Image (cartoon, rainbow, N blue to C red; front, side, top):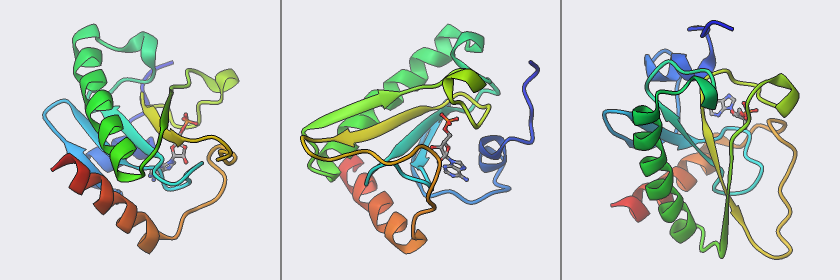
Length: 139
Ligand code: AMP
């Protein structure tokens, strides 16, 4: 399937849609998931127009994974999280809903359940405080 430039993450990259950004460099962008499955749920995307893992240029993927590693450490610190789950879905049968490659960073802890995927919109004021915690951990 050809990359669809109307997807929401492409709009965020073009500045046409808002995002609670926490990190950006030449290759990648990280921002809070607006329908978090758990507090601190953060997404990392390449800036390259890439639909999924299998379409990705390996060099770009390497840069993106470096950002995943960096932002994951910040999320872990910001949310005092003993565990971090990285998730990445490819294709509708796998549950992918936004067709621009992205990595989910999800804090995990014993007894802390994760919510339904892409279901409940967060309070934006709360999301901004969460974004700020991640930014401070990255600083
Ligand atoms: P996936 O189902 O793996 O494609 O994940 C897409 C993710 O994007 C879901 O977790 C959604 O909650 C999240 N999402 C959808 N729209 C936005 C948006 N405008 N800003 C941030 N996250 C979004």
